[in-house]
Image 1: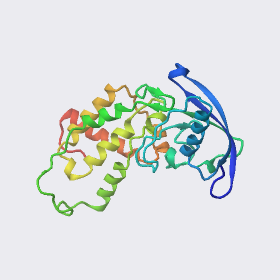
Image 2: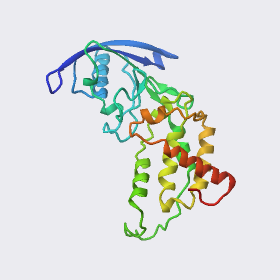
Image 3: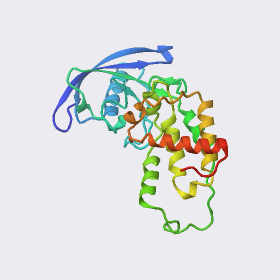
Image 4: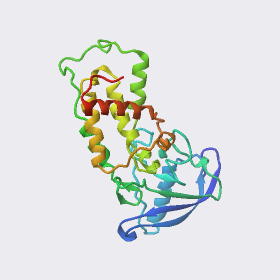
Length: 259
């Protein structure tokens, strides 16, 4: 099944299988021939599962939705790197041309106490949902929609907010961190609201609630290694962590707005 450019490769895929017939988990190795280099990584998995189904074997469970780098569900650790070797790229946007002919590709689920494995490469990331829910609400008038320019916001401020809001909640930051910390994810959610005037009213309260919930979910502590930023497919800056810490301390000590 050659790619659009006519090139194809033969590979071995070493996949973590867990649940069902595989019990507490083990690696299984599969040979795949004539994989088109224009295929996405998930399309390669589609081919693998078609092969397994044709052999009356259990297909590999993995998550996917948009396949456009937006939903954040296509989370895999590929050869030891969350989302694979390409910087600023989700698993679904990774293509097989990134691998050499004859390569062995090791694929695992995200590893973290707070991300228990459901089956194979699928993990439970509801802990992220709990953190977001802890953030509560924003006090805005819910009547007639305001004009988009009713609240003037400086360009630099809006850009920082949009950059933080780009977080897709995939969990790569947690998988990359040796402490399984969720500081980058949580700070992105805190920061994109706290940066804008509409979110300033509850900024400290929100940061306090979200960090408290993050700790309850069992995530580790940040030790400023920076692996989270390096592996984030949306390249979220760790500067957001500093902003979250300021807002959090403001919530703890009840101080006026921090800068």
